[in-house]
Image (tube, rainbow, N blue to C red; front, side, top):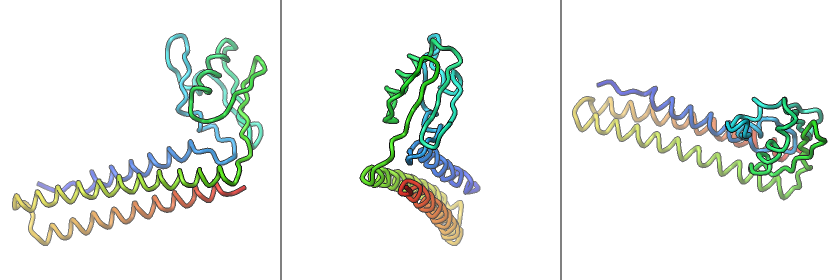
Length: 184
């Protein structure tokens, strides 16, 4: 039985991309339409993504403008935004909904950086758990005499190198997002 190194690498890759997706939803004082990605609107009884029922644009650095395809959706979109955890209050003029991003205070920026670091730490824990699973699988193969002790050491070294690579990438992502949040 061959040891499937790429299975564990794929899992680590998914952990990193999941972290990057989470970082997109953390707002850093600039309007980023991706914070609306997870918001669902009730469209004739069907939960639909905001992008599928409205045009979303960024007319200014700190404003997102949402123009529904149908004027009747304005109330539903507002309700969905209020129910979400993005922390913005929608304003509408009957045709368009505007989300204005307040200037972040120093205190709020520091809270966001803590959140960024916590998410990064969780991703590192996930990567280390994947390493542990891989090492357990390697030990099982050694116990079953499917691989030699030398092969066991080589595989464990490869897994460790892979883990170190992904932890370094997570650290880079944390640092980049922290810098973005702290930039006024």
